[in-house]
Image (cartoon, rainbow, N blue to C red; front, side, top):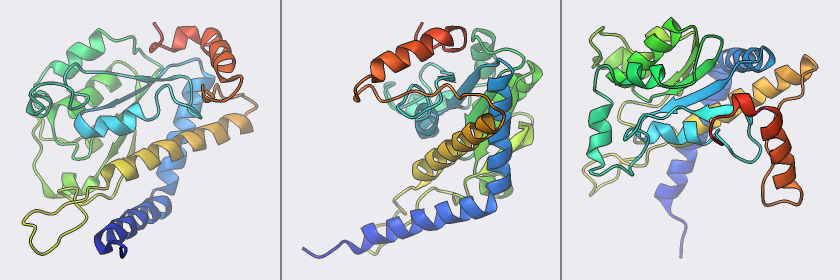
Length: 251
């Protein structure tokens, strides 16, 4: 069987995007890493949020091997994945005004904490309101989005603004509008989205930059090990005990 031409094209497209982000967003990723390090060092808590498929990159940095133990998932019921029925309800919830405010008010997030908001388009009410309200509460907000949407689509939030307009630091994923890298004869719609690959890589790069900053400051980063290596569970248990007041996914 010969290699798939389209599969190879997708890898090329993803690698191209990753290279662009590495080169063009280096300063912003370093700034985001420094902000995470500041929060860890000062005793703050870390949160990540994403709606729909954007939640995948947020979930990828929470309670995982090789990850920063202090990263918590900020969840909006029904909006973090395709487990809600019907799945289209999740998309509808992203457009509901007031939902983000209610979630933040009932969450443990408070002034001095940091929130990373992942939203590809950044145009819906939920991520925009989440950023607005988080900053009003005194949180540092990092927005991971595609700036192309803000430049070429209309906001769905009452303010007319996008996620990028309400963040302390913006990380641009460079994903094109529509999030589909390939076209082919006989297929009427573009396909092969790369946003998950790119946003997950940006999240991990940001945390790597944070680890680098903490080490440079003489602060040991609270990292998790794999539970599938000898001693991993014991290591993680110690970390979770030491930082239990800043880890919420265990309670």
